[in-house]
Length: 145
Image (cartoon, rainbow, N blue to C red):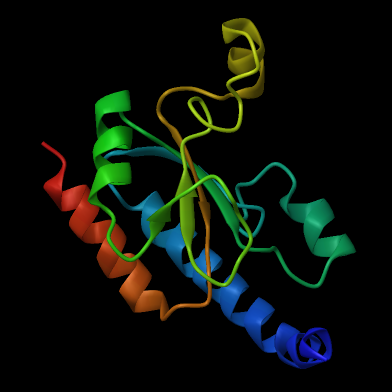
């Protein structure tokens, strides 16, 4: 019974999930400590055109690299609303550090091949208010020394 209830709200949740991701990806592109942002909804993403042609949305996963590993770690420690966790894809926003969490079984060479560095963060947007998420990221970036 609860699965059926969840399915009824899925389109609304996905809409908010994608809205958050797109807005946050655009915001991240403007941050001085961010080297690059990977989100298929951004026109500069290598898969943008094919994704646009084959899907009705771009999802809620964002990868972004910051200027150094210390910044990455301070952001992970600094977020308050966004949870630092390995599990992705829920209704709550989560951030992960692939080099030390999801990709620890890869060699340094394999990580380098895949672009997994100690500056890379992955962000799974949830359905919280967009501005609350941006405010949380902004205060974490501001706190970086």
